[in-house]
Length: 118
Image (tube, rainbow, N blue to C red):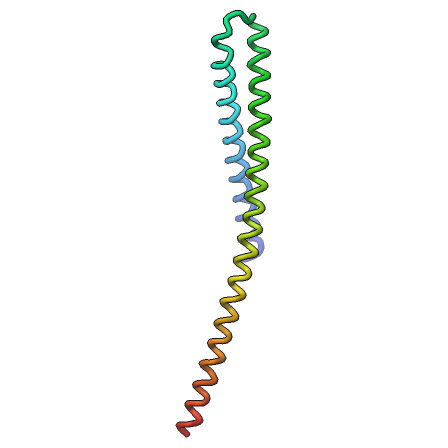
């Protein structure tokens, strides 16, 4: 794959991630608003402006906690990705080492066998 094609695929993947993130956040907002409305519903003594204020504060608090949770999950994902990439590189080097060693052994056995035949 050419460098331009790789960059295009990475950009398309990044755009897809952004759209997915946007949709996830919009769903989080909708859930927070529904929960806020359910929270203030039994509070009949609140005035309309007080009800709106409580709902707004509830939504803001919910979104604040959701953002912190998402940031914590994203940080953990980045950490795991780094660990997995490092582990993959180590395993790949080990496999290449085994392949080179096996090839060298096979070449020496083949050379020894051919020298015995001659």
